[in-house]
Image 1 (cartoon, one colour):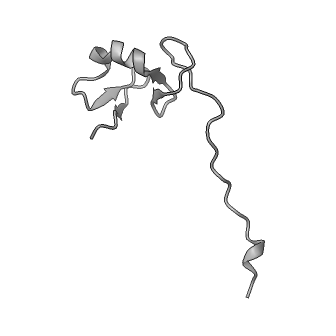
Image 2 (image 1 turned 30 degrees about the vertical axis):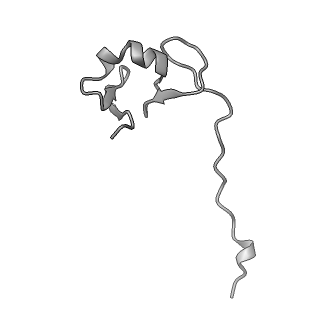
Length: 74
């Protein structure tokens, strides 16, 4: 039987090194809503622009690529 000690381990997940940067206000913040395309918007900018980003309060539409993203409330 082969030894399990010689099997390569999968790489460990690491946390992000720095806070994300908001694409609207260009500030470094601890949390951003992010789209799969890379667009990121901070909570303050999301609240200011919520009227144009969401029509139902459950999802928001990315202004760069047009994808629907969840707000995590359902």
